[in-house]
Length: 148
Image 1 (cartoon, rainbow, N blue to C red):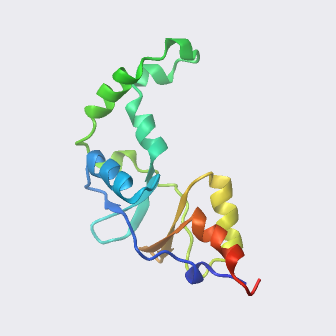
Image 2: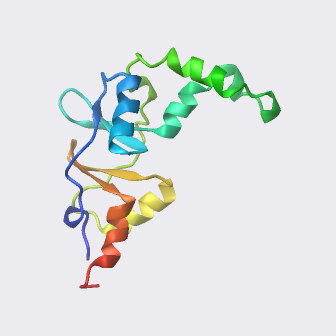
C-alpha cells in the first residue's frame, strides 16, 4: 500500500495566523499555489486559506445575498473591497475545517479526499505539526511508480 509519507512534498509553503491577506496573496503567487496551510505561533496546523476563501472575502456582503448575477458589481468594486482587507490578519479567513492527512494515511485515501474536496493541496500533519503537503501532482505521480 502506497503511503502519504512516500510522496510528501516537504518544501512547505505556509503562513502563520498573524500574516496579512496581502502576504498570503503574494506567497500564493510566488509559489504558484491556490491554497496555503496556516499555522499558529507554535507551528501547529490550524487550517487552510484558498483562493476561493479570498474571493469570498472580496465580495461585499450585500452582493452575496443577490441571487441574480445581473446585479453583481464590476471587478473594480470587488477589487476595491479586497484592497481594504489586504492588511487584515489571515486568521479570520482561514477554513479551520479544511481536511488534512497524516503521513501514515494511504495515497488512495488522500487521492479520494483531494478529489472530493476539489482542492489542489492537502496538508500533511503529524499530531498537530504541519510536516508537508500533497498536491495533485504527487497524487498523479503514484501512477509513474514502476512497482504498481
